[in-house]
Length: 627
Image 1: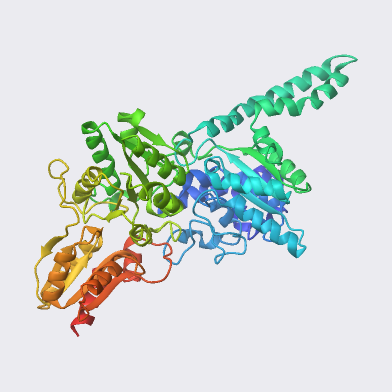
Image 2 (image 1 turned 180 degrees about the vertical axis):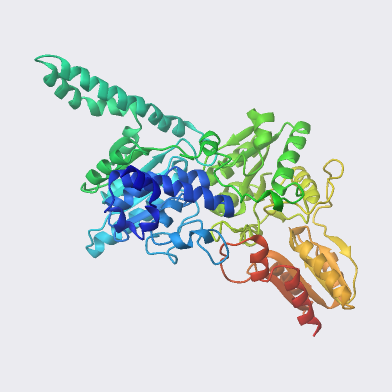
């Protein structure tokens, strides 16, 4: 039997969760190992979230074995840990398309499978969504269960506690699986995380408990009586040994901690929990990156990784990324100005601030997955005379819009928002594309907004923002720069002034950020056809350099704006508003921008071509105007 198990693939026989119910415990354990191998092999090809998915393989199998999915609803918080879930819910044969154009998403998507109950991609939404589903099922008279799986990193965000508070108050039949691995993307921070991390001693607590029971039962005559007394005292002991009292304060029935890699214990616990009424929280201890030693040893690095290219395909080293240039410039400027403070929301590596945190630990704040707090905390620092730089991905800055308006811009506080991953991000898909920021930041009164055309300009823009003594937002893309030299020390850019990069008479190509490169490439192609195109690097979305733009628009008579942002309310809209204010109504204009749509996953180059954002799209828009 053992040799048969070693040579027979269990995974290839699993077409859905119902197949799990036919497997023995030994077969489930083999399946877990097969799933891990399949995930590692695929991520090496396509990139993806490796460590999170490896850490929940047994938990995934146990949930689908015990509960009746898709009738019962599993909501995966963030959703970057769902590779095992996808493999056992009918998507095994498409798993090779993970994160590729027209392939499987790296996150749950309701349009992709009935087993994906809720689209996720941002942290801390699962409990609130679960409350809504539980209430909905109660109103419809359905008896199905709702299970929200949330990690300890996501529990650093306030939304998770709003959901817990409501669920406990309503006494809804909601099961929360607390996946405790001590990590979000980077190691968790904060007092709450320190409290929850007592669960690490939960392993010791469980061992001590079993040994204590064994010793008591060995006592002749009185052992069983003492054991009964001890069990009655267990809840009091648990309150001090685990974070159970925190969740019980929210009126949840707390169970755990449970070893998240012991299938037998998970199955027993979840089977019991499935019969309970009211809100229940199951505390599960897991290891991020489980089963792959490099990921276990460095889970931050292996949280999300790129594809591994064969040695024959190794290209020359790319230029430094915008992220690394930002991080290095922050260190350089902080050495000159002790008022500069850096703030990130659980992303010291992703935002390039790791070097800053090491060089200036007293001036670095990682607030956890709490973007709203990050912005208002920065406002408080600004009130005390500091120059806070809040480094947050564009897509996550959406979560803190009210704080940007109310706590920073209303008071005209000198806070700098460094928005990484602006524009097309790529394989992470719709939840991570930074295509809205120019619109939602441009509409805020008093907030300056700019985007660099290259990595060297990023350095100068950051310095300019820090010297402005006003609210300012700086937006830059994911990935490598364009390869320009980093010249000299960061210097002041003329405030609100654009840069004429190329003269021309037939039309004006007006770009912002990565749109400048597309405009310049398009100008070269048009020149081959005898078309003379001027190119302006706008630099500022707000304040717009109206003088330069209007002068060249009048001269050329035709204008193409280029941006990686939705057309509604973006850079092109700002240019059209400028024309309107100036009474310049005879200018023929085309906007190269994102249409009224969300952008799914694929490589950056594929998505730019597909959505008409590359040089070819600029050439087409130009020719349409010329025709």
